[in-house]
Every structure is written in C-alpha cells, then in structure tokens.
Length: 499
Ligand code: ATP
Ligand code: ZN
Ligand code: MG
Image (cartoon, rainbow, N blue to C red; front, side):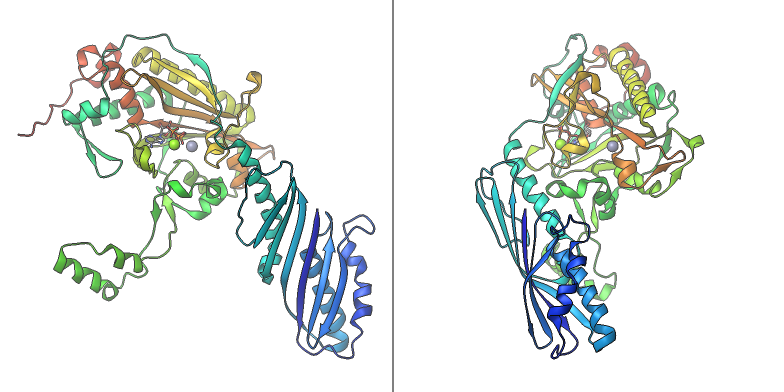
C-alpha cells in the first residue's frame, strides 16, 4: 500500500523569518511513532507561502499521511505558539492518492463516495481524492474507503450466489386437503381483504385463526419456557440500526418515518385549504413541510428492544433474559415481491428474544425448536422442514452465501422453518429461529456480571405465513382441520356476506 497526501496548514500569521525547515526536520521522530524505524510517514516536499505551509506527505502501510498531518499540526502548534506567537489554524488536503493491491482482481468498475477516480490494473488499484476538508481527514474516512473498495470487489464474486440453504430435518409427508391459493380463496369468502399495497385487513375468521396460533405459541412454548411479555417500539430510529448493523444495507426496504417540520397550524394552512378546495391531498406540498427521516418502521422487530439493555451490566440472577413481543406490525417495502398474504408490506409476528451466556443461548434455542416441533407435528399436523441458512442478521447486512457449512459447528446462525404449499408446489419460510452470537450484546454494549461475553437469540413467528401454510395444507373447511387445533379454536365466527 502506498499513500500520498498533498495538504496545506494555515497559520494565524506570516511565517517569514521562522526556520520551518529545521522544525520539520525535528518532526521526523513523531511521524515515525508506532512504525518500524524509517517506515513512518515522510515529508517529501514543503513550501511556505505567507501564512500557509504547503506540504507533501508519503507513507506505506504504517502511519497514514493524514495521521502524520495531524501529528505535525500539533507539533507545529507547540513549537510556533510559545516562541513565535503563531497559532495553527485549519488544515486541508488538496490531493490524496492511494495505491493498493486488492485480494481479487475486479470484474468491473466500482464507484465510491468522496473518491474522484478509481483506476484498476490487474489487482492493483489507485484511488484519487481531491479537496478534502479537515473533518474528512480527521475522521479516518480513508481507511473505511479502502475497506469499501475491497468489499465491493469481493461482492462482485459473490453476487448472484444464492443464500446458503441446506435442509436439516423434514417432517413426514401429510395428506393435503386443498390445492388452491389461500389468499385468493380467503378473499373470495371475505376472510381477508386486500388494502392498498401489501396491506390486508383480517376479518373475524382469519383473525380468530391467527389469534389461536398466538395462543398455541403462548401455551406450548412461551409459558412453559418462562418467557415474559414486553412492548417494543415500532418506530425505529437510526441509532438503533447503526448499532444492530441494519444501517449498512437496509435502505431499499425501509418504510421511512418523517416528522413534520413544525406543528404550527399556520404553516400547514396552505395544505389544509388546498385539500378543502380540491378534495385532494397535496402530497408535494406535504413533502416540503416534513423533516428528513428519523428512521423507519419496525423491520426485524427485535433491534429496538436492545436500547433497554444498552450499556448495562445484566445481573447473573436475571439471566437468562427471556422475553417476547406481539405489540404491533413490522413493515418492509417488498416492492414487486408482494404476493397475497404470503409476502406483504405490513405483517404480524411474535418476536421471541433471549439473552444468556453462549451455552445458555444455544440450549434455549434447542428447547424452542423442540416446542415448535410439537406444535407443528402434533397440533397443526403440518408438512414442514427446517433448513440451515445464511444468518438473518448477515443477509440483512447484504452478506449472502455465508453460513457454517460444518454440520458439527452449527451453533451461531439461523434455522428457517419452511412449509410445503400444495397450490404452488413450493416451500415457504414461515418463521425462523437464530442464535445471533455476540452481535447484539457487542453492538449495544451489554455486559455480564462475570465479564464473560453474552450471546442472544431470537425467533420471529410470522402469523400471516402460518395462516397461509395452514390453509394451503388443510383448506377452509374446519371438518378437515386437525382435531387438536379444532379443540383450541372452538366455534368459528360467522362469515360476513356482502350483497
Ligand atoms: P423471505 O426470505 O421470505 O423474504 P426473510 O428472510 O426476509 O423472508 P426474515 O427477515 O428472516 O424473513 O424474517 C423472519 C420472519 O418474518 C419470516 O420467517 C416470516 O415469517 C416473516 N416475514 C418476513 N418478511 C415477511 C413479509 N414480507 N410478509 C410476511 N411475513 C414476513
Ligand atoms: Zn429478531
Ligand atoms: Mg425478505
């Protein structure tokens, strides 16, 4: 790696009569600090113009030139302040050039913010940046730019690769009582009603089925395993997604939340009046009157729980933490992918979260899987399977294809639960369960009493997907439903008829 920076340092006064050359020579030691001898940042040229020092700095892998620049700034401030009463003002870079060797040869061009030009020659890559302010240099954007180039080139090799997926367990085949698309058939009989894009209203019958699923999960899993209910916010602010990792990649799927610029009625008067006259909501004028997004609607459901634990030390007596949330919907912009109630933009999930030491988290995950098995085999009598897949928290950061391929080491990661849909002869992910490793405790600074690393797990029970699964396999006639389920749901509400 080779770095070159052309920069200026501004001073409060003219530097005439000061032997800058001597002072710069004396700075050699500080420019080498932390590097093997002779390997630090080096000044390769300098020139004084009135109150400005123009300087060129070079380095290899030790001491970035911008670090060198700030060391130099402090050094000069010290040397010139006392003796000459000259203050150091700002600094900036006019040209930054970085030459590095990539692990893989790029297949196509990449673009990176802040970078004016990227040149590739085989694995060799040259980055050219211009007009960089002090903040840019100080915040070490350079290193993150280098990582991003490597990441993007790496992704060119991954792109198009499917997520990792391997079936680990499969139920016995079951008799199917239905071969139609559940969403369409339920809509025909007013069990559900499509509303706008990817949003559904669930009528009394569909709701009773979903609520029965919920109570089965409560009776057969949450209660016996000792999970307590919590209420997690559904509006998620950026600070949460920065810590959970979602801020790296989530943008195309977010439903954004924008507060008004003001709640002063006068400033909304135009909009109010416009509507009264035209009966149309003036969307463009509203756009002008709202702030930038403060975040988005709940996506993965568990991240906005974590600020509860943020920067806390959890007492051993409170472990394992076992909670669940069913207090509202998640939203995702699924765009063209929406299909019936299988893939919707607004959906309902029970989210189950647990925190413990490593072994504890894995053990609870396994206990949860056992409860699910009982529910799907004995109560709902489903045809279903479990697959080992790319962990959800990785796929949501845009990392595909990754999962522990060694069967004996399948500890941290995600199991998808998939059901067979007779009408489309395909498998649908209807829920998952994960050991999320140390990701969340690390991201949110959550510590244990003993100092040993905490882990966490979560499982998202998608109620729309359960409903599709159940109706797709068992149909809409209760006489064909499994007896244990029928016992639980009792009498169905009457269908609502429209004339
Ligand atoms: P898919 O691969 O089907 O898009 P996903 O991998 O995006 O699912 P996760 O992020 O793992 O799903 O979310 C966990 C659970 O949330 C899923 O198993 C499913 O039950 C539910 N879910 C996710 N997206 C939707 C959606 N658009 N509509 C309905 N349920 C959903
Ligand atoms: Zn989760
Ligand atoms: Mg998805």
